[in-house]
Length: 214
Image (cartoon, rainbow, N blue to C red; front, top):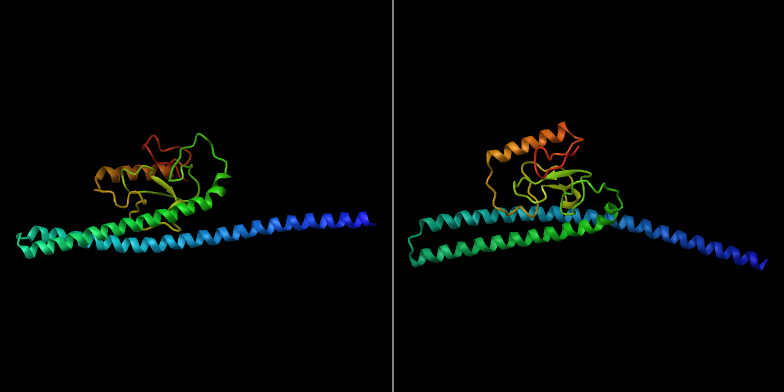
């Protein structure tokens, strides 16, 4: 009888231990979800703040060049030029700092989703994209800078929850000089045509760096 009681206690303990492990796992999933949502919210806020800082920087830069062009080199004019130069440099530094914050939050998102993504089986011959250097999966977006190193990005990796309107630049290219030219537009048109017309084929025949997204 004592042996049966001990066996029952042992089974109960093992069952309790398994239940606790399951509870911990479920809690970790819920926590991961809330952390991802929080990170996405942070990215959205930082995005809005960065856009405001970029607008301020652009305004200061235009004002600075305008005053510099009209300056008569007098002491008073030199003070005004110096003032707007300082404001322009500060606005630029603030924008760069905000961009660094965005990258830090994006890095956090990568690490949060890294375990789940690494469990997926990928063909070793597939082309790699994005900061995470993984193949195409889920929703993807193309950076509109013609010299972007990665070209295509996973939405999750850059904090997107919906397709942005207009041009979109990745964090690395947001402040890189960019002068649109007709050739860029032609290449984008070819890539889009290939993307939707040849979903089972890579775009290597059309471009050097873009994937065949479905």
